[in-house]
Length: 461
Image 1 (spheres, rainbow, N blue to C red):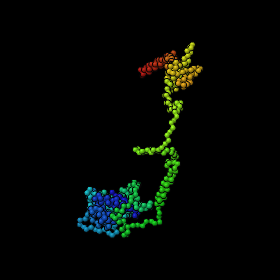
Image 2: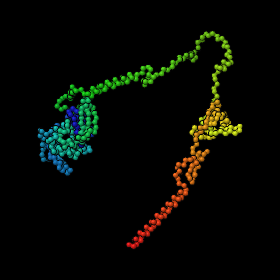
Image 3: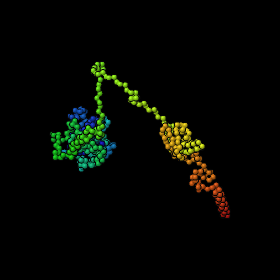
Image 4: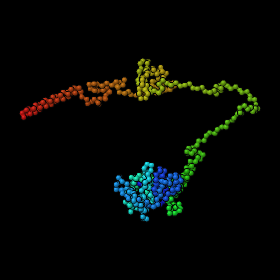
């Protein structure tokens, strides 16, 4: 697989390559061939086996034979010479600029090839002038189980057929423009011109700095930053912290209790004063003796005053009337000689329940007094209730007034005859049926005559 690392100088390309590509490959036991200025002694201090797995190239590899990828399925593309000595490359050829820089006989435990890490690949693989054999090897690199990590400042400057083969492109940018010099921003693209699929920010860890050198032409290791540019985001972050602190202080001041209200703004109700308690002597201690005058004999209080000061006795429980919660309605009155009876209806306000007479109420403890027609008072235990003729209506067809429907005419006893007002009488129904039968008989006779005429015509023909 071919991956790419892109970024301006000082953006963190070398750090990303060493920390997240070279070291993981070495830890997996894979050989790394690169032109990065790695510190092999520092890597060997981590694991002595890393010394044999790292190959740092500073000059192009001599030509060891011929390259022919026309029939790679049947023969090796690298054809080594057996009768000639290797030919050194010319001075104008850069490292990883020829196909023989990608020749390696190393194979891992799983038959994987080495990892090629090419720094400043726009030098070895220019946009114009890259050998065709190198382009062919990049297109056939999976036949050798090799992986490649290309590093450059802009992939527009390298050979475009090779750039189109990049599977994952990582763009690095130092976060000093955001006021964070100790980290860099990393964006992962799906291919050379693909969309961004991941964005994160990584901090520089000092333990990786000694494994490589990114400034090969100087002895210093630090770069001076821009002194006349103060990022706006830094000022905003400082103002944000100040505003946050000020907001917290304002909230504390706004909700600070003032003695009359609590933290939530509710008014504090003062509690009643507590009377001090007088404690007696401790248990087992002798109480002090205080001389007091001998009280005079109290005069006996009258019996009436003693009875008045006595606690009042509890009131006897009240007896609820038998028809408690029910309503009474006058239904009628019957008078005969010296006998007078009033008929009552008991309901729950909307529905009739049962009927009573004035005699029944008097037997239950009520006293009934008739005032006038539909006006009666009923008294129980001193409570008087007025009763009138306001009983609820019964539904149509009740027990006291059944609904009668005439089967012949359909008329109702309650007078609601609109449904059957247009219904025909039995005589009219019989006459209509007779007329329909006559019409049907005439139609059948006409149909029989027509069929006979058709048969006669067919027989004549």
